[in-house]
Image (cartoon, rainbow, N blue to C red; front, side, top):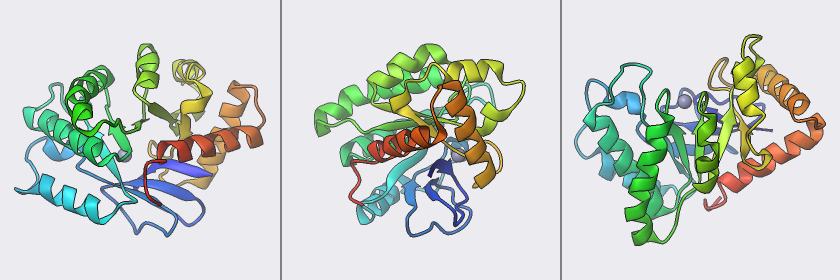
Length: 230
Ligand SMILES: [Zn+2]
């Protein structure tokens, strides 16, 4: 079973672990290197951060890029520096053909439109489009067809276990099975019990056995990172 988005790895499963890390990645974990949108709220990382990121990615051919994106959770408007940093990291991921973990709290539409605009330019250069993981995606079911067309995957969070999450569960049941993943980032990072409970809930929603669903989720996770030299 693969936990497709966490910052805190534990021993019991394989993780896609995104910077900033809290804890050491395990041997089988896949690391994602990048600058989170929250780093561009009030200040910016030290000069040369993009070159440093490029260097670290070149040294780590088995690393993806993430988590990167935009955010409207912490404040209403998106600072220019955040937008620019997202675009720069997207282009970098595209040039190096690395899978990308995306953050887009309360602004998924703008994340999608940014990807389309930036890839028009960078896809010409690199002739390749990376795969995307829309992590913590919610409230924007209308974007699902666009996410599919962008080679996107969607990871479901433990919010699905919440008794009141009727709309979220409805949205999740509209996600095509072949782009579905699960993650523990929302609550209880690295929590084995919540990942297992999520699989059971999803299996019920999709009328599948938990074993069959687990197999599908793992296959999807491997397809998401297929461009990495592992
Ligand atoms: Zn995260």
